[in-house]
Image (cartoon, rainbow, N blue to C red; front, side, top):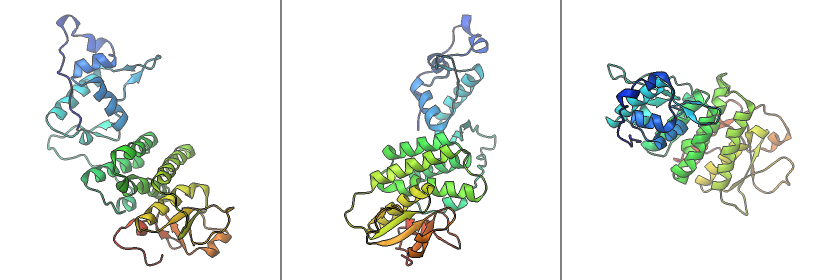
Length: 293
């Protein structure tokens, strides 16, 4: 929990009206609300609030209203309320008089049902990712994926952020609320793919060949390899034009199923289980190895 790092600063009487007359820079806002500049920057980066306007030179400009909200937020944090409960989806969540939590609209029910082997902190991490997916905050999703690489244990990354990010994208598409922008979706898939490559050790022989049917399925293919590795199974992502090495072929796709490769596939895997494909959730489970593999 981030706490207020400086003592509240009282404005001199001669300038007590400055908050109503002008915007403040980050140092002035820091003194006015009792939060250090570094805390203001971290909250903005991690939670999307405060989100002050920027001047032409790029400097932050805090409005009088925003400074007052920061004062109130500092008081709640100092009273012991975790900051992650006070800022949701880039907006402050002020406690209601009856102290009942504000309802959070949830749409990714299937993704939330995926196995999560971590503890409460990992579950909080995943909830933050899923809320960002549900509210279409692409920049925050990428920031969470990056932060996971240095905040989470490597063995927890798959369940906590990597698999939920890809399955969540597919579920949003499935419920007709796709994440806007092809570039945003591609950036998230590319980030997941890159991290999976880093986590997977290079192997000389391969029990499974995992074939992404479409370019946008590549991240799911790497998720599949990483999930198989947890079951002590060797796997490699292959491409259509590569030589046909030994190994059991698994085809992965969230799109239309077509092509000669399907006739040679031992199984077809998607982010979400359907009549024509298995779901990645079966492999993500650490309880037992799927019988169909």
